[in-house]
Length: 259
Image 1 (cartoon, rainbow, N blue to C red):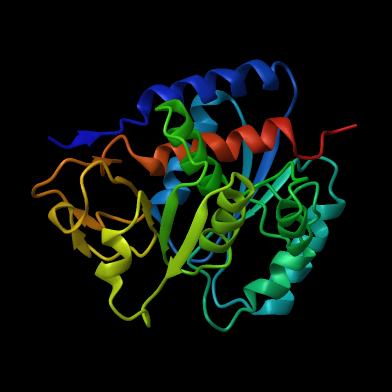
Image 2: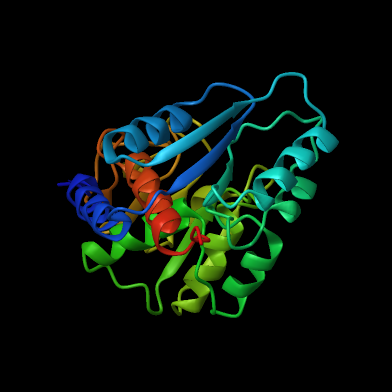
């Protein structure tokens, strides 16, 4: 029988630490958005409930230079603790140029290439919150990564690639699959752990996998639970809210403090 890896207890545990670390400090996150997203709503909701200040910048019809100008102002503003650029980002905006401009000490989601470099040499403080959520849920269920065959579906800059690096640092054998991968199911069948970050509903079924496979669903229901003996993160009480908790942990623990 398949087992759901409920993330809610771990989420509460992390948020309790966030409250303890925040104490009476005035922590403020700058949230830059272009389109509405569920993730954005979750962040704002948690900030309100935890007493974390936020400034929400909704940008319409912006270009790369305008976004960079805003980021530069936020970098210089000592009242801003962390800066978050929320996906989806319009294609006319060079998001990588924007990531480069975020102060590495205010880079709450670890997207600046300097922070990604520190991760690559295993000396990082600020790591992408979804990457942290994946690692933390595996650790909380005592799922070892040492020597395991891990397949990541998706090759995004901000999640899949740093996740692969983190897993390599923990001695996993990592394969990245994507839309051009041939014979995807051959990779899945051999995997001990599958991490899917595609946002494609029912991309594969639990019956496609070997028994005791662990599936971390970062998408919106990438796996269809039909048969088999696997462990998986559910749509509700899954990785999404846990990622928000990890983001706020980054904000209060590692981001630049107000002098």
